[in-house]
Amino acid sequence: DNRLSLIENFLRLTFGFPVEQYIADPVIVRAMEQLLILHADHEQNCSTSAVRLVGSAQANLFTSISAGIGALSGPAHGGANAAVMEMLDQIQAENIDPRDFMEKVKRKEDGIRLMGFGHRVYKNYDPRARLVKKIADDVLERLGVNDEKLELAMKLEEIALQDDYFVERKLYPNVDFYTGLIYKAIGFPTEMFTVLFAIGRLPGWIAQWQEMIHDPETKIGRPRQIYTGHAEREYKAMEDRTGTSELRLAELQADIDKRG
Image 1 (cartoon, helix red, strand yellow):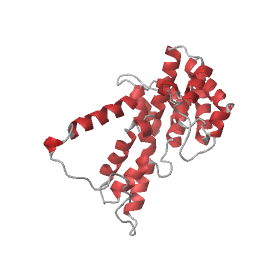
Image 2 (tube, rainbow, N blue to C red):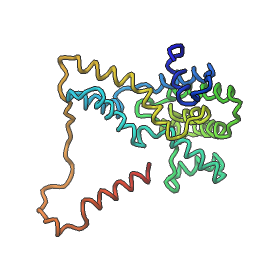
Image 3 (spheres, rainbow, N blue to C red):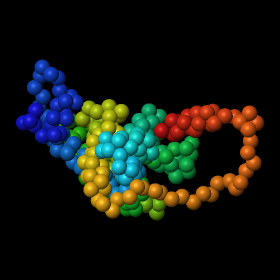
Image 4 (cartoon, rainbow, N blue to C red):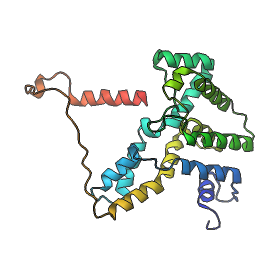
């Protein structure tokens, strides 16, 4: 519908029905606009670097963008806000006191991790997180949602900001800490979170690719590495090796899936 903005059309196509008129709530539209801007490509992160590296080989736009999407599919990059929701769900399901949970995090008990805290670049409070927290308040108030998860998230933040353990390690809420709560309240399933992340990244990825392709100084990317593995080893025939490469790969993938 050309009468609607990009976000209004996106919400209509996502939540509307063909035979019914869909009018997007202005508060939700504004929130989505802000969230996509806040999720724009942010320095040379993993997915943006993937786009540039593949694009440097003069791969077309669609192939280069696919590389970025592939990078975002990894839970360590694109799954942070979903991981926050899983953490909050677990705390609620097991009826864990927030302070007890934070103590378990400090003791690294049972492999418990504090999701949605810390950033590779921001060593203080992520400025995007402040904006997202305000968006969460606005959206939940507009929808009339009294979300216990939001209260729990705010309690975890309060504890972390007052605890020297987290302050000394620069563990402050990042942009992913509150976004899952907002998306869930709007009606997006958890499986859509990374898709929304990618939509926010797309304009920057496209701009990066276009800038690089039009730069005559661009050369194919060639990351360097320093080998620190085994020294020279004696060759072993396949039948003399313990296990198979297929088995080891399967074990590695199972470990990644478990962590994800």
